[in-house]
Length: 229
Length: 217
Image 1: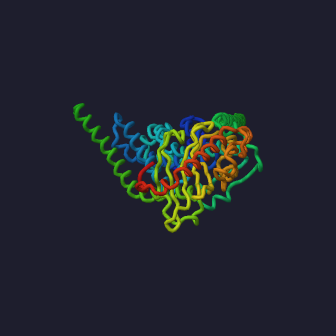
Image 2 (image 1 turned 90 degrees about the horizontal axis):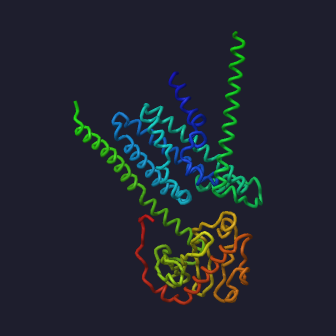
């Protein structure tokens, strides 16, 4: 029972309270660069999630073995092996998506969120919590990528999920949703400034939500304590 | 009591162990995936080639029948040009030239230009570019059908003087807000045609380059 609550907290942290893209602001380079469309964001998000799960699990399993003075180089080696494995697997089975995400797959290695989770969490916890933490952090990052991709694709092209077949195979062709037909194309959203502006809006929206939730719980607590006294 | 030296050796050994584990893992994955990756790369190339030349037009192994020409001054780009040669029952029918338009708005625009032996264009496609999204990217087939208008053209159709974008007095239209990109593409296609008509026999006679399967990049 206690463990379940603990895992739930880890999950909520990764997705909401400590969201890599929106709160901790790590790994912004790939976040800003590939989010031109939902599908690109989802592709990189899933690859990053997979990396986080595998690297957190390996770091946690090896944590008894690793000594403090060599832990950082060991983390880097582990993460690099995991990412290269994913790169090879993607080339073999998702070649078209790989050609689009291109350099950003090997660059997952340099996403500081991954080594950050290895150091701050996985190296101090048992394999199961470490795995859940990797999954939650990855999904939180993935969610940010997808949201930003949706924002930019919708305002830039007027579609959602264009080119889904690159990720999902043939049936993905029918997933494309054209919200604004004959959209003239909004250049700003597709170029890098659009990524910064979009991310800024997302961060603001998340902060507004968090503040509202916090004030509501506080008011709830006030009422409760007032009732008690 | 451990001595510092002993500690150092243990750390080094541990790090070595981690590196070895990683190497073993990657060697295994590489062995498992390398055939499939090579196959995917061939498929991707062939798919692009078939967009500029329909597969029923030839019956040879197109992606292996390649020769390379190096003429940086003519093509205005240092990279060698690959020429894929299509044959039907041993007879040359068409060639696909992998040329670069060096003067796009944002650098190189890489093209595949397919030409039948009678000098007509079988098709043109852009395979890589960095033109501005929304302005220069109608040269991509998935953005517009502009690139398909080269099909059937040849050195004297339109007249040599009209081989240019409309802004320069030619017959190929530019897009709103972008003249440089289509101009670069038109000129590169024209160069490919000129080279092909001047060197056609030599191109088909040249020995095929060694097939490069399984190599990265």
